[in-house]
Image 1 (cartoon, rainbow, N blue to C red):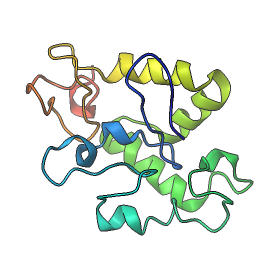
Image 2: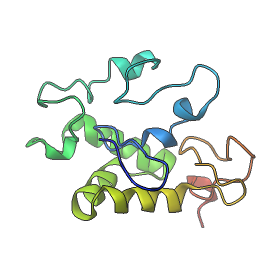
Image 3: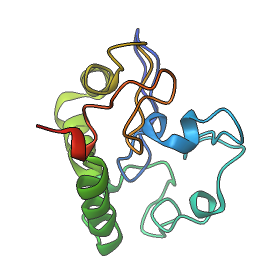
Image 4: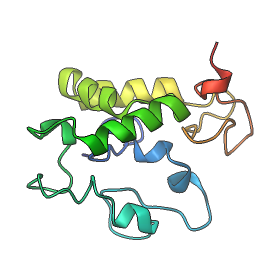
Length: 143
């Protein structure tokens, strides 16, 4: 699902991960284009069992729309992301459904924008990949 709005558009993967917060999306060399785009992606993204789930009628459909939500795969992803990266794909989908895409996009921009250089932080790194400032969202940096 792709967001529209006055801010930079963000992409919500079917599993609830925000592609723009991924280090693969943010790196300059061998950059990933995101889950819902065609182009360069790591192999594990191409064969992703969540994106390619046969329960969905459309590969871009959010998992929260599935009658089997949350499945084992999504529960495993949720556990890994909340523990290692302080980001909840399930909460991302729930917020989007309840408050809308624009509100979700604004919330992500507010939470994940670097206070030094105004670029998006990566959920996968302790510091901003652009300026090196600490990522206050990273689990070991949280107060």
